[in-house]
Structure formats: structure tokens, C-alpha cells
Image (cartoon, rainbow, N blue to C red):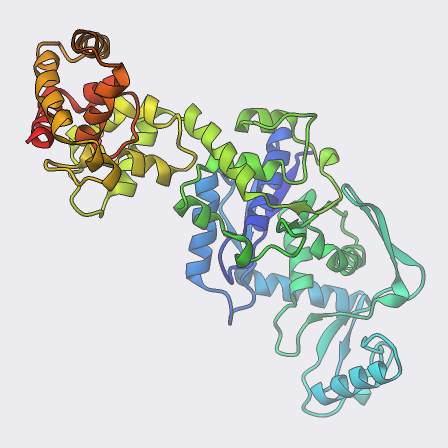
Length: 465
């Protein structure tokens, strides 16, 4: 059997971080078992579904590298098939027509609540002669659900979960206007798409009992179900904006790498010993639903940020340079040309050592794109007194005589410090202010080499004047 999983979002908003984790688990499980990962856009709620939300969801999946193996299926295009199955169930006696009006259903619910019962449909048209149907009323089609016994779901995460069938009513599968309900459409689509494993949030668990009954009514094989716990905020409450970013593309904007986000989401509810840093290939090799925890996970933004720093340090310098150039675009007074990109790329091994986000990385690299005269922060300006300016004029001559490689620059600065009776830090700090406009930068020798001879000497000269 070929394993086939699916991620099935409703395009009514952004790709939430919980949905992204669900997609990731489906992707990893299918890849681990040499199967297929599919996308189904459940856009049957036409009032709330938008093309913009669909594009955002797909963009988020693409950013995370969750590649689909077949073209996306749009549920709204399959309404005729959903209706066809509903009528097949009707013909087989597994469903029936219900002629209740909206007022009748409202009164039914109100009476049940008043009597302390759950507001379920009472089945009044279940065995009634259709000849009794009121004139001019378009019926809905309801599932003729079993009333005795129980429905059991052998959940791969939660274990066996069961509900008494007496607790479930005869749900509508086709509305009176001929449109399918969500719970019915999902079953038909999963069957037709050959889905073998339904991996989704445990907030869908109550839906599963009803969906199992549709599968059984049609005589279709059940997929395996795995309901994964939800993600909460650090305070244990449902994750929301007050906890921080909750959508995938927000994390992108905040400077997180997709592989760091995937690694973090993987560890929210899944574990393999003490392993914390897990790249994509390793995740595919190790991931199994059996290792998913039953308890809810808590989002820890500080832990994600630290993990992101690890991935930044591991990332290719050319890729990081492109990211930085994109993030600096649009900022005033920056020169973003090929020469600037070369400078950033040359200094990237040092720049990325301290950065935990791409925003931090871009801010640290911005000085490389500035032109003389540099803006100075107050602390840097404080280092440029008259003695420091004289030092800059003197050390510029020593630097100009080198070939401007890192070893040559380091030797020149050490020689200058020794000759003038200074500590190396006393030479480096005025140079750092002159070259960057701040008091923080990578090593001064690497910074000088990245800027190059002409630019470095121009910045030193401007600061000395």
C-alpha cells in the first residue's frame, strides 16, 4: 500500500502555525514511508473563502519547503461528486430525505435545551413516509446513522476513542439547496484521493466519529486517523496574536529561516531522545506518528529564536547575502549594488556568528552599504576625539601599505599598536567607529578587508577630518 497523506486547509485566513505543523507532519510521514503528500483546499464556505487566502497558504507551504506530489484539489469543484454519493446513499437506504423547516429545527433545539438534553435532531423524518412531505419544501438529505452500539476510532496518537451512537444524530450530508456539508465532502474527497492516513489537529476528533459513519455507510475502507494535540501559548492558553506571531509568513517577515521554523515545529509534539537540531533529511528518516505526544505543546519564541541563530550560522553565505540585500532594499541612504553585495558576502562568516534573525543580520550589515560621510551613533562619535582622529591619520598610512588581506591588516594593526605603545583595542575602537558608525562590528581586520582598500581609507579619512 502506498501511503497517501493530505493537508486540507480552509482558505479563510492565513496559514496558522498550528496548520503549518499539521502540514509538516503529513509531509514527513509520507516521505518517511515513501508515499505521497497532497494538498486539498477546502473552499466550500464560499462566503469566507478567498483567493488571497489560498495564495497565502500555498506561499507559506512553499516557503517551508513542503512540496506537494500532485496538483492541489479544490473542494468547491467537486460538489457534483459529493451530491452523487449522497444520492447513492439515499438509494441504498443509508440516508433519507428530511423536510424539516428552519423553524421546526429551531423549536427542536430549544425544547431539547429546555429539557436538559443535547440539541440534536430527533430523527422525525428517518422512517416517515415521503408521501407526508409538505408541498413546495425542498428536503435535505440526512445520514441514517446507527443508533445502537458505538463508533470507535483507533487513533494512532490518542489511542482507541469511542462514542455511543446514541450521542450522534443523523447529520445532514446534502443541504436543501443541493450543496454538500463539510463533513460529508471531506469523506468523499479522502476516499476519491486515496488518502490512507488522516493526520490533523485533535480539534477535529469529534468530527471523525460522524465521518467514520459515512465511510461505513458507503462500504469504503477507513483511513488511519491520527489526531495531534494543539499548540498553546507559553501560558497554556490557546495560541493567539497576544502571544506573538502565529502565522507562517509573519515568521518569515520577522527574519526566521524556514528550516528553523520546521525544526522547531517538528519538536512541538514529537521527540527522538534528546535530539534538538534536526535537518530535513534527518527528520524524514526519523519521523513516525508513533512518536507524537498526546499532550498539548507550548510555543516558546525564545527557543525558536535561539534555534534560528543555529541555522543562520549553518546557512550558505551567498544565500544569506541575498536575504540581507532583500531586507535592506527600500531603506534610505543605502547603496545596494554588486559591490555592496560583495562586501556583505565577504564579511558574512563573521556577521552571522551573532545574529539570531535575518533582521538582526541585515541591521548588522547595513553599514557596508552606506556612503561617506557615515551617520554616527552617539557612542561611536564619543570615540572620535582629537587624539583618536590623529591616530586614524597615522594608522591609515600603515594600512595603505598593505595588500589589504586579513593577515596583512592584522599584522599592520598589531605593528602600529606596538610601535605607538597602545593596546590593540585602543587602535581598533576608533577604527570601528570610523568604518561602521557604531561601536559594534565583526573583527576589525575582517571589516577592513570586506570594505576594501579604497572604501576603508575614504571612511578613515572622513572620520579623521
